[in-house]
Amino acid sequence: MYFEDFQIGQKWESKGRTITEADVVLFTGLTGALNPLFLDEDYAKTTRFKGRILPGLLTASIGVGLTYQLPSDPFGEGFVALTKLEINAKKPVKIGDTLKALVEVVNKQEREKDGKVYLKISVINQNKEEVMTLNMEILANKRS
Image 1 (spheres, rainbow, N blue to C red):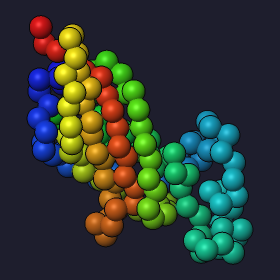
Image 2 (image 1 turned 90 degrees about the horizontal axis):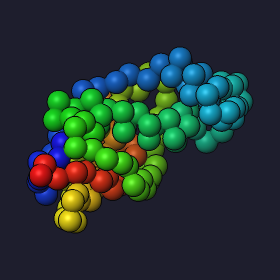
Image 3 (image 1 turned 120 degrees about the horizontal axis):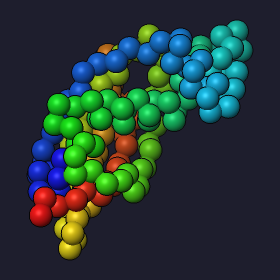
C-alpha cells in the first residue's frame, strides 16, 4: 500500500493460524533460542506456565506474518521498510493455539516523498484473548 492508501482508524482482521510443533522447532533451531521452556515439556511443566510456550519473538513474527497476508497488502507495493517495532507480550502462547492479527492504522506522518504509518497489531488467540501487542512504524512511498 502507498502512504495515501492508509487511513487513520482503518482496521483489518487476518485469517487464523494454528501453531505447530514444527513452528517451534524450526524457529528455535534457526535463531538458536534453545531454551528448555520452548523445547523440553518435562522441564516446562515445572514452571509457572505448566508446559512449553512459544518464544515471544516467534509470536511477534507470526503476528507480522499474518499482517503481510492481509488482502489489503500493507507490505506490498509502496512499502519501503519496517522502521520500528515495539513488542508487548501479555499472555503465553502454546502449541495448538490459533492466532489472528487485528491491525489498526493509528497515525500517519507525511514527509516529502513518503510517509510514516503507525500500525497497532493485536495478536489474539482462539479464546479472543490478546496475547501480544505490536506497535509498528513503517515507511511507505507516496504514489507520485
